[in-house]
Image (tube, rainbow, N blue to C red; front, side):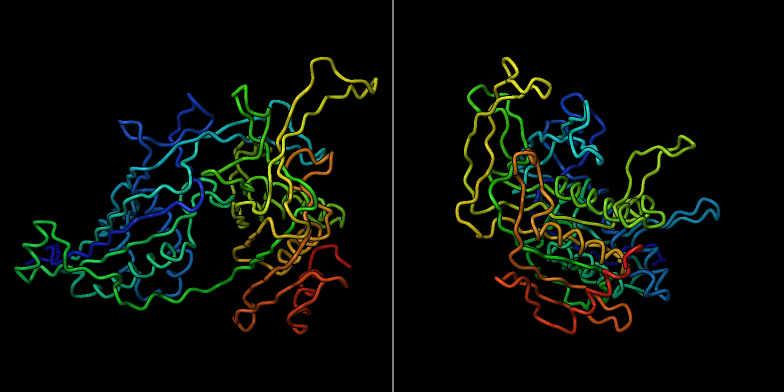
Length: 461
């Protein structure tokens, strides 16, 4: 038996549930600016390459540097190709394409906002296809164990599989495009694991018949420890009056604009929230005359498709992640409005339109849950995000459309802030609650850390 002989298999199956809309672009733009990838029958699917790419990046970003002694094991698991050294290793990890029987495709509207004027850019409207949340995809992984793996690293393979299963099971990883804007959030359920040892004839027969009857729900392996170098704010807000994140209908019996929905629920899209946060963060740094303010914003929030002076396209992935959340305790109500000529002060002829914003059912009741995370944060970045959240909390930063008539104003109710201390590497947490006197803190000692973050913003006094 040579080193390349297959001596076993590890099989993982499960159901991948979409908890937010998913974008897997096809590169076509016949029906929308971004179209979802579809098979020959027109049904959307998730390519195995997309899943493997996300998992490999997640693993290398969080674990590979912590275990340099097992570098060869990683090469055998993920595959390796070095054209300069003419060395290549076939990956032992296979992920089949993920298909779904209930996936639905809808088109969502988007609009580009001018950061200076805070109004829509001319010809800035675009649309894109998404796979609606609630879809369930069949997941099937196959890990091949060869003789060389059996000798050296079968246990490592099992630990890697257990490690990359964990964020899918906990729902802490996203796939597809625009994941930092809340898309592609998913959760793996109904997991079954089957291991085959080809030294046993019974296992060989079971594999040939694809008999996965002898299964378990996990690999019973300790996952690799992960450093939590994230800064997270999980805040709950009430609406002061109304909000609308506009979606436009082509049906004559529907309002001209209403709030975006996802699987029947009114939602606050991550794109709208993140755009408002980025613009306010940029305004704060500019007001403080922070050195390299624009560069700092790009390093934190990323860039996409912007041209540099040498006419090259610069792309930098954002380290800020927001989640798309359902707006609760609200009631839609249609309003008819007219367009006013700003020069004469009179109405514009034939310019009547109607919109259907969302209104709070009960004053000070929780309507919106905002979750924002900075990966690999620096202290000044945490301080900047806290300043932006303060503006949201204190009704100074509006979200969504029709802000000129008072929509999109939020009132802070409570918040939980978590981060890892960069010196002790211990997880810290503080809870904030709004009351009649202002804000109460659960831990006065940890409150000093928040002040330290705020003072570290470039230009802050």
